[in-house]
Length: 413
Ligand SMILES: [Zn+2]
Image (tube, rainbow, N blue to C red):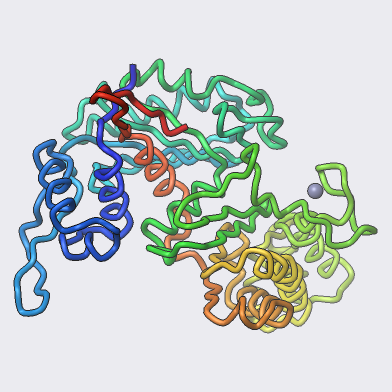
């Protein structure tokens, strides 16, 4: 049976706030909740007795008085984040104070199948844990980001386009066999990246945020009131398959003119190849010859920085298409922040300014009044940081009292 730490609903509320903002004083906790100082003091004392939080050595001055601040107790245990990507896996172990202790990466394509990839991930994780003070058998949680559609309620991957052999594979059970004490949770990689951004990236503390990953595919992770919004079946945010041109190119999903088919990495490369071969861009042609007949989205970014008009046009149009879809989302959802991440975001500021321009010109003024549109602050680390945060979400079990003091455990999912 996986380990879980039992807490009350009031304690959970404080833990969530401490996780969201880092250290917190009692005064802060009173102002962020509806509870009296007496109730906060009682919950804080209980959490200290359970060794879940600790009083910080330093102190904050508030109104001329020194006030104690509290953080999660790192030494209580550890969790791991595993980010499975199309071409490699990233892993990290963090303590319960959310401090990353050790990290590792390995190039191994996801198409090699779940048996090989999961065995490799478990072996690397075990080695990483041996580098820490924590016993691998006592790891509390493992969060895993997957580059495909995840049925979150049932904990399975469903018909992933780039992951042969993974459809409904028992990922959670396989990893749990290796680490029986851990709560293992899987989610879509973009959701996990969004979690990474609100916990340790540019979106730290932001309540309503859309994280957009532009890579081979295009997807979005939606944070609503500080939590991932997954929808009824777990596939909310799949914006790559919003149709923007009914007569556009065929997408791998079977429809025509999806955003992903027009503005994803392969579409950018396709357009750059046409510009190189047709003689429209001398700079892309130079890269094409230098790379032995290949081009990447990164080459398009470099050519644009050299002032290549064809590359600038490709990036502008890509940003505009993404921005037009995001404008509809802004009108619909009114987020505080949009964070752009993924490999194609390396195209640079021209991409960001094109996205911004499209969003601002097509959204309602009230919806964009306080809207920030920014690049990811933690880049490629967003996935692994978010996966560890996902694991943290399931370390604590909320006990709720029912009649005559009888207690039962409430699973959060
Ligand atoms: Zn599609």
